[in-house]
Amino acid sequence: MGESVLIFVIALAGLLLSARLFTSGAEKVGQYFKLSPFVIGVFIMGIGTSLPELVSALFSVQKGVSQIIPGNILGANIANILLILGVVAAFSKKGIELSSRYIMIDLHYLLGTALLFILMAYDGQISTGEGVLCLMAFLIHTLYLLRSGDIKDSAPKEEPVHIPFPVKESLMMAVAAVGIYFSGEYTVTSLEKIALALEIPAAVISLTLLSLGTTLPELAVSFILIRKNQQEEAVGNVLGSCIFNATMIPGIASMIGVIDVPNELLALPVAVFLGATIFFYLLTNDKKISTWEGMLFVLFYVAFLLKTAGVI
Image (cartoon, rainbow, N blue to C red; front, side):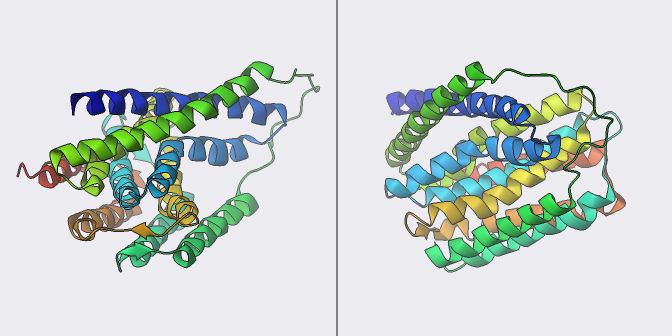
């Protein structure tokens, strides 16, 4: 099993690095084509940080271990809400101040997509038809963002400057795409072998080990935004990633085959996922996440991991 663990660590590291390189290159290409910061932030950064989860999901269906997908989605979103948002708030000197937009729109979409995912998974399977509904939910959210977001820069326009096409970044994207493909394949294969060796369901390992690993891009981006004093943007990145995970990942993966949802995921993980989402929604009604509330979030996540592992 030692060899499988080593392959898993190396493949996961390669997957995260490749996703980061792909996102950085795509951001430069987007700037060349004069895409607005809004479009670059929502689509390139949001989708880029969720690439590890998406690639893992596609290989899971292809290899006949689709039960990894719901475990990864639940684990990643629980980690996003409790761990990453908790860390962001805990390391912010004055906590996080939220605008009305997050309270009235994004949080509602977060809660709605959580309920939709649980509804689709409740019977133990996510079919292609149910996946289409998830894709439609993401499309609705995307169309709203495009219609209501600040797409055009309101700052005074300066004299246009010719920017050469980012050839280096384009090549980096191509190399990163190859890295994502092979890293994703080896990540899923090694995870399956580890599950067999430990006689633990693959869904449970994906709920903890894999999901914690694939949320590292969001954690890294959040730390960068904290250092830039952009806590609200960090919250937006996490919210966007959670919505993408709950809608696009099962939606796209179900186009390849039916996704199985094991019974062990329909008990504690679903309850924690829904509870964390509702708890986050209630705590942010005052448009603020305090440092102490962030610490409480992290404590809840640690308790979830220990409970899942059977330690407590």
